[in-house]
Length: 228
Ligand SMILES: [Zn+2]
Ligand SMILES: [Zn+2]
Ligand SMILES: [Zn+2]
Ligand SMILES: [Zn+2]
Image (cartoon, rainbow, N blue to C red):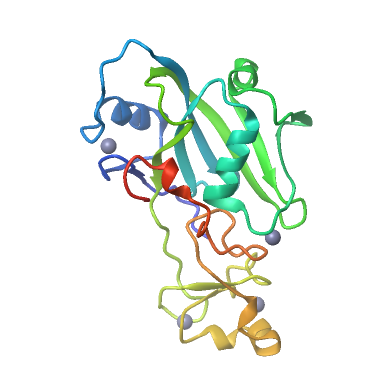
């Protein structure tokens, strides 16, 4: 798996920016694709960086209302990135659990960075950092403003681009990534058939359990324009 951080795409203008808080905040404040309505009823929002704890290539930046309960962030992360078949999830700071009814502004009053786990079996671990607090229009609860570009993975057996991943070998980059012509070389496919293969998805849960992406999750509502 690539360790280098991937660039992010702006959900408004589709331009690419590097993954650092300075570029993120600078672009967001001057993005030409964003129409800023002059309004006096500003609501407090938080700009949050959500990223895979172990692969910094997977990341999202969202703007969320500061008064939202954590369960809304839980639903968002499940919808866009992790939900496969109803596993348990939780937020925590170190060994301290953060309740789902706590509000963003309560949690981030004390902390700058918290953790999220989805599934205690084949876990997906995510961290969430506060980048900034802003006054914004009273619009959507959660809005994606940047999402990492698609990463490309090479087939473990040849030079082609991998399109599927073996759910039993996903932890082993030497053999888990497969292109259309090599998938039969995977031993698990030989013994158990194509059901062991999962599509490669732009998500930290790619290759885990039965994850097949956000289809059917109505994620359009999280984007200002088209899904990126
Ligand atoms: Zn932009
Ligand atoms: Zn599952
Ligand atoms: Zn191949
Ligand atoms: Zn396998």
